[in-house]
Amino acid sequence: MATVKDVAKLAGVGSGTVSRYISGNGSVSAKAAEKIERAIQQLNYRPNSMARSLSSRRSDLIGVWVPSLEGPYYHMIIRAVEQELRLYNKHMILANAEDAQSDADRRAHFDYLVNRDCDGILMSCSLQGTFELARTSEHFANLVLLNHQADALAGRCFFIDHELGGRLAARHLAELGHEKIAVITGRLSAQDARQRHGGFLDEMGKLGHSIPENYVVEGAFSYAAAERLVSAFLDMKLDCSAVFCGNDKVAMLLLSELYNRGISVPRDVSVLGYDDVDFAAYTAPPLSTIHAPIEEMARSACRQLLNLTYDMDLPFQERFEPSLCVRRSTAALG
Image 1 (cartoon, rainbow, N blue to C red):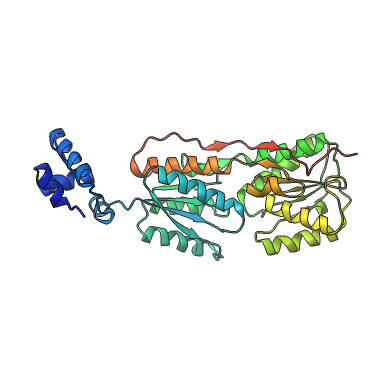
Image 2 (image 1 turned 90 degrees about the vertical axis):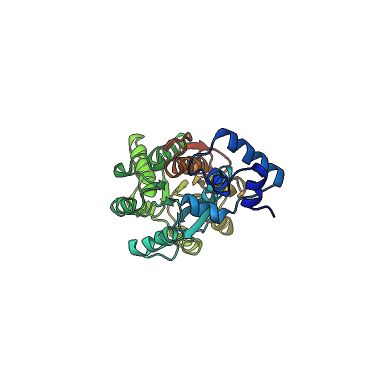
């Protein structure tokens, strides 16, 4: 295996000149750079990544902090970020804060990424408080937030207009003639769930329909808890012709339990989801849902993080709009 000395000998320059060329630190003449590059190609030399990171004080590692790995939503984010990083020869370290019970616990998972010498960190943090996020960013500048809006962190927040998503859901069900609608929200401690639910209720009110308080049930985070919640929801035997679910995971579980109880979708009740995750097109029946551009948002956040961390100039946008995706789980009231 070729070494720096081998490259230097073939190029006719000093080892220090080769090291400066490889690390990008210090000046190297155009003539010397050409000789070194030719020698590298001829010898098939591959720089040692550890030595290169030490010389540049960069690890080429990006940390990704998520509150959970359960369900397809976070898998879609991780996949998109990993694919984007690969384009720029960067690598990912993941911190899963699923066991965190407090801001202090969540901060410990963040510190894990810092202590692994990550150059930048992307956080998916709808459950985090804005004050805590701002305090975190003061101690670690190369930070971007996914699925969160905060004026104090302008230029580093990437989000979907969930209020608009809630309004799109209300308009779709109202246009189908549904007036008696029940709602299973996301966890309302999360910013995105509150925005989505608020937009839905406000739009329904503008359309002349009100949702009784007892027709609104707050969702759960895990599959097991959501399964219990869906069963209890159906045991309430609400007189509704449609159900709007705050995410596709709950909608999928609802479809399954309705089938088990002999209730036909959409003949007896329409079901509308939210997110348009990977499995939404493959439920029975295929799930009508609000498409949230999750992967596009994650890629854009990743590009801005690369800009902040490595002085790149990649295009990005911060706000993304959802859209209605009609399949076969919703139908006109008839």
